[in-house]
Each structure stands twice: as C-alpha cells, then as structure tokens.
Image (spheres, one colour):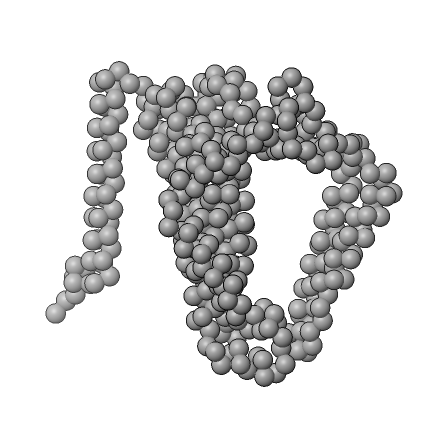
Length: 386
C-alpha cells in the first residue's frame, strides 16, 4: 500500500498548525480592520502620527531631559524609565527584606519568630492600594512644610515636598576615578575566575573577596588623591516656598516604593520559609556534625538547596511587583500608565494605539524578567545536581 502525504503524521501536524495560524491571523486582521473602519466612520484619528506631536504638559519627575515642548514619544520614554526605576528598586528592597523576614520566621527565638509572623499576616492581608494611601497620605503628607524641614547637617532636608540632598557635580578629569573603580572590579572578577578554575582542578579553595575589595578600594582612593578629587556638591537651598538645587526625591516615589516593597516582601518571606523547610533536616544535622557554625550551615548548605524551590515562585512575585507599579496613578506618580496611558491618551485621544503600546511594554518587561529568572533557575538547579 502506497503512503500518501496525508497519511504521514508529521505532514498532517504541519497542515493543522498552518491552518490554525492562518485562522488566528485572519481573525486579528478582521478585528483590526473593523476597528479602524469604525474609528474612521466616527471621525476619530488613528495611526501613530501623534508620536511626534508636542505634549504641552509638564512632568515633575524625569530621568531624562523633558519640557512642555517635548513630544508624546518623549513622554513615553519618561514614563517607561520611571516605571523601571520604581520596579527595580522595589524588587531589590522586597527581596532583601523578604529573605530576612523569612529566615526570622524560622528563628528559635520566640519573639523574633512571632514578630516576623505578625509582619507577614498583616502586610499581605491588606490591599496594596490602601498601603500606598497609608504611606502617602498618612505618613509623607504629614511632614512639615519646606520652611520647617527636618534637617541633617544642613545638607539633607525632609519635608512635605520630599527629600532634598546634595547632588555631585563632576569637574574636569573626574572620569578617571570611576574608570579606576571599574578596572579594580575587573581585576577582582579575573582573580575570582582564576581561583575558581584552581578550585576545579585541585579542590583547594582560596577566599579572595577581601583581597579583591582592597584592590578596588585602594585603586579608587589612590586615583582620587592623584587627581585632586575634581568633584563639587550642589547643596539644596530654601528659596521662596521650596528648595532649589540638589536632588529631590518626591514623596509619591517614596510612598510607592515603600508600599510595593513591604507588601511583596511579605509574600517573599513565606516563599523563603517554605524553601528552607523543604531541605531535609539530615542536611542540617550533617553540616553541624562536621563543625559548621549556624551561619555557615545556612549560607553553604540550606540556602543553596532551598533556592531551587524559592526561585520559581519568586519570579511570580517580581512580575506582580512590576505590574502593581501601575497603581502609581492613584497618587499621581508619573509612571507609564499615569503620563502616557493617562494624560497623553486624554489629549491625543488615540486609545487603541496608546493602550496597545502600554500593554506591549508591560508584557515585554514581564517576559524579560521571567527569561532572566528562568536562566538563573536552570543554573541553580544544575549546581544542585553536581
């Protein structure tokens, strides 16, 4: 009996997948065409021509140069950078805090363990939006006016407008100092790589972290002394009703970071506790039997094995924190949703394009975080098997 292409399972599989792909593309094409036809029938502009139009509104927190004469495209990048700043700082603080609280919950000290439990049960059971309002309206909005600021050494000021502190102003030739620091870090990394190769060959381990730190610091200090430290400081001064100069961290940013970090840390603490408890007790007893101290048992035996359980759910918390940063609009922090999908959308009136771009940005950020965490998870799992 001759075999026809249709009787081949591989060919049939390709045909089915191609048919499904054509069906999905056709459906999206129909929906897009129908949407743009309806927009045109109602006299609503479509397309991406608005991208280069002048925005005409100001933004109080920007990481790049921006003014009222900038374009909507510039607004997009200002909002994107503000979103990435809040998310990255929030992830670092939440991870650090969550690990400490998760370990504290397993502490043999009754008081420390109970305090960690109270923190977790309190923070994770209160809606995040209410916690943002608490930090913003209940704490930071209760600070004094700029004229009655809390001051530290007449250089750092805390008031209802935020925190102002001196800004570094590099002079001519300052670039040699950070370059020397980078060279020190490179030397540190090469030394660590060399010692790791030595350990793989001989099994003999040498701790060179202190040596690397000394090399980096010494190289930086010597270069700074030789160059005369060409660095000045722009100290904030009260002029009129507000401070001028220096760097200002607005209260909206502080409230959002505190709420996101403390809320997410409660969930991370539970993930860390579950990961540590998943390690067999015999591992801990064996480590203690060979003379390791409690801190060494945790660092060299428990945590490396627990990471294989901790990392997958930890990725979900990072994604949640990034997506929850969109609640910044509730306190007018200029993130991507507030300035681009909010103010820019209201002015340009092109909801399909702006909301579509905003959704694609959050999807891209989330997929990027997941990709890096999956890479780290595979490396952790590989180390656990060897």
